[in-house]
Image 1 (spheres, rainbow, N blue to C red):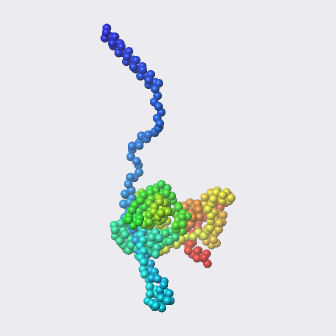
Image 2: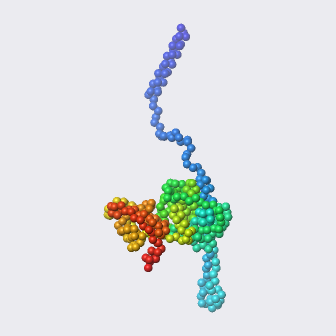
Image 3: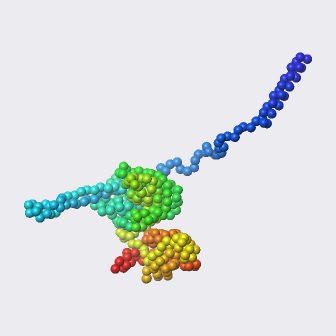
Length: 383
């Protein structure tokens, strides 16, 4: 009987505990968290994308060379010895005597052909009396100038050596802002160096660096000595020739410029074949189409170049273009400014045919023009 009473008490106690727990769970609420974080269940998965660009560097670096130039400056010992008084005392023994001052500079270059052709910047080798190229393996070779193009700041050198490592030529027209690029060169003469960045912008012009500008802008560190070196993509293909930096201190500030390889390719071909660059000429003048100009002329397209004048007998005239026409495309190049016209035409040799598209009033316009020789027309116009 006593055992039965204890068992009954135990059951009542357990039941009361369960009821109390249920009441607590029903009326108790956990306070809202201070941070309501959303967790990605895949956050611990490995990140996609390359973790090393060693493959790209190993593919391109052997074809990037250091370029050392020597300039000899001859100066008169002193103009005072040309004075009649000193000539009377010393005769002509000291007159016209000169002394030599040697100036050395450095840059970079890229081997583009196994026969020994090297592309670099014109400003790297301009007025040099001697040019030496140091290969990736440390071998030094004397180089000669095949041809230069100051307007684009491109030069081609030649070394007497066979079976040289060459770089793979890429396609700069497909570059997009955000693409990874690497700059290879010889900054400050410390030796071959690789820096990484992204494409910050394409089609940069009106910088006052060259007459023909269509730069790739990058934040890959470019410093003095990098000029003429390679800008490559993540696969090791050449997409540009490093040329200039924007800097207030002389060092890299994350704004560097490279000449697109698509422009370099055509210039390089002409320099190797003829030793000079001949440029096409369309023979027209124009101005950028602004929103106000488009509205006043009733133009459908806000972007383009409005033709203001056409030179009689020139390529544009023969193609039937007239003042008031608007150019929006030249071949596959979109035209948004007069600089785009200069670059699209100036990178093609005389005799090339280009297709020009745009508007004449509210009608679509398409014309084929055979380019003239720019130098020939400049000589005619300067008379």
